[in-house]
Image (cartoon, rainbow, N blue to C red; front, side, top):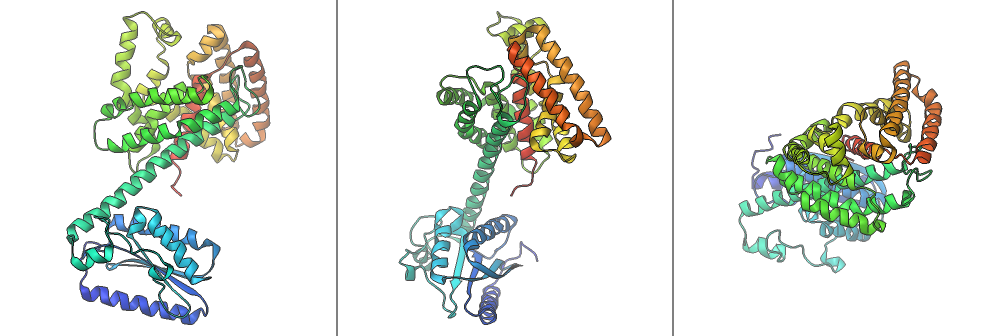
Length: 462
């Protein structure tokens, strides 16, 4: 099939006759069944392109969902230069099926591109007007489509361009929503994973007296819109300057902090994640089909110049925060340095560990613990230093490094599942000690959420 080949009137007539013959055959083969036929409403001689095929597959999945409550009998798809087609034979009230499928056509912008016919068991096509529904609207002007078609109000080129614009907009919106959902899921999973040393989880609040799991749930829900905005910003900058994309996020990050504090009664649950995950969501939006590691590296391209400028400013001015004072004293750049380096701790350490643990058969909870341990062993967590002092933070890193070595040996031996109970027990002891000492490795928790987002983003789209 040559997707670029134009079709003739004769081609379309032949396809229509073949479709009618198929419908009659299905009705004869499945007495009492209704037949649903899906085609794409595309003006002009070119009836199939990669974008149209993608929109068609979206339509097929939605038709299946609408028909899920009816007994399926048969389904088939045809891909020819006259355009993709799908046919479904189902048992049920044909008028009600038509009504629900009209809601699909009318309920989405891309639904306007779907042409869904329902043929009853008697062989008669059920019209929209028979259900008291208005005619479909024109893609361009919003008037009744039959009137515009009859009067040839718009050119084929205008309609074809509008078709692809609708498809592109739909999938960009879907991508932004998907990234936001994955980011929210990552925050919720990070909060739930347990036992985490000194951190809020589903078992306790760790070293925090002002927040608990429900505070984190409220915060994660408040931030979903921000993550979607970041993803849309990235999509808008595809093929453009990565640093300009980062600059466009700054005001949105401040608004997100306000939304977080309003949701939590002023508690800082996710300030670090607002920065790091916002940048990552935008980086995911800027990319298309690529490994998730490429999006993490893009975070460095987006932030590197600005982060180096900020660190240079800190060197030449009075420190305003503990993180700035610690950078001046220890040259540990915290999340700024992580971002400028493309989140190497996630890309090179935590994400591979999470994947290896999952491949070893452990649960997401336990794989998350394994990833957290390796982050605690390799990351200089300024939050842990601020709350526990240099000595307390170093002691926590040594304990994490020892446990990290045990996990690595268990992975090498193929024995991680058998040893996870001991790992959780050691994490529980560390949690008790951190809670008593008031130490919380919050920076590592943010990086764990980043790791989970990277893992979710790498999964095939449903």
